[in-house]
Length: 197
Ligand code: URA
Image (cartoon, rainbow, N blue to C red; front, side, top):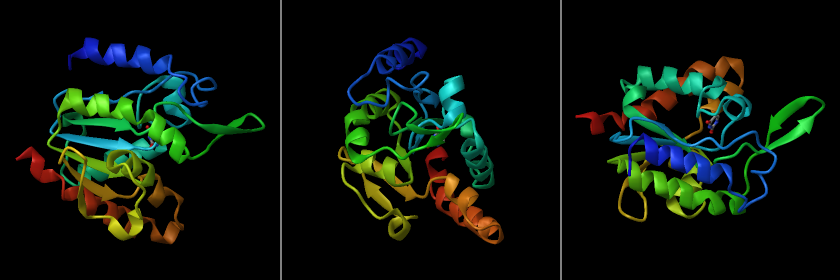
């Protein structure tokens, strides 16, 4: 079932998931959204602070950068399916602020079956791994994304996976290098445009 009902069910099931320790502290799970039959599926790391509060993937600062980059690459975001390797927000409390903490390999691997479930429902023609955590989940092994960005690798069922960096990378870099970092990100993403025919 790849209709809205199917994804509602996935939301409820991931919400209750306690296969790792992240879920108990998060506000809610965040599952993939977009065209349920998208030819292209983009996979990030995990929901951030705003995604955790509002329940939708890539709606915070990294999401805005992703939207800008997709637009520049000629890829319609509304015709993509956008998801994450990990369905709950992992954070560290610093006063009142919740600071993002990268998920570990065990958490990524524990969450993998939820992402695989989404891939099976959407049946995209290609996937984009946005950063190391997504690449780990999609390939089942850790790779160096800086060296392999811009390359197509294969998911276990043969689906092509485009490797690139996480959209927060250009945001985190030195201000003088942000334009170049965004341009490089757009160049990577543009390789996936062909799935739209
Ligand atoms: N970063 C991600 O990897 N995913 C989101 O949904 C938001 C920020």
